[in-house]
Image (tube, rainbow, N blue to C red):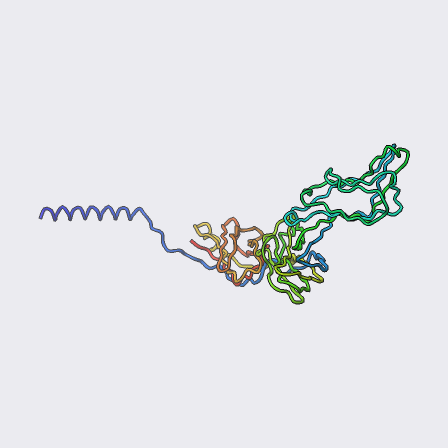
Length: 368
């Protein structure tokens, strides 16, 4: 009997303690939402595009040796005598994207028939090494410089050799249509540049050609954008989301996986976005709802994105002030605001962005 009394007394004491704790501790209640306004928004951001650059690729083949001009000089004249001389020196840069498939450098030029070079020889040096020595009749010349003698930056020197036996005479060589061509392949490479501002507004790239003859693979910055057997007019499109483009140099590669491809009337277009669409809506924030923001409520702009046509940032402003907006995704999203972002009365909310979004609905709510 005494044991029962002890247990009963302990239970009463424990119950009393719990009642005291309950009196001083308040438990959170359910979340409260106050609806302020709702409205449709529609499509916002950069919704249209236009071709800002068009590169005419003309007609070329894929699957054989390619040629890229590094320097073209209409005419060069060099001469030398005991008193004076005129020589030429050029720096020839080889872009890095050609280094893997480069076969060599070819110098093509014509020695003008009225050159008076009988007193000394014409000298051409590549990176200090003599690659050509000549004295004779006018003739077209083609000199191949092997790949192992080519660097990313090269020095081309054109001179007349001094001949002490004919010290009183002047030797002159006139070279016409002097071309420094890089030979590479068998794939065809097309470099293109993008400014940082163009990259920000880049929407898509478009390659068009009339093609036939082989199985063709097209890559942009190493990413496949086309694989197939062209037969007639062909269009290839790629977006910034599909291909990692960079400010500065980018590269398109046409690669034959069988035979030789003939691509006619080829062109490459770069489309930038333009004509930004901004959706503006207005709603009333009553004095009572405004005061709730001082009583622990948080303002929210909840918005439902049906589709993202172009990735990018989304900007939401209340009365011109930008809210912190997380990376938008399809479905419901939310941006918060506080009492410092609004005032009681009419509020203007705007939606814009560097991307393109279809926003089905937006709801202004207060939540605690």
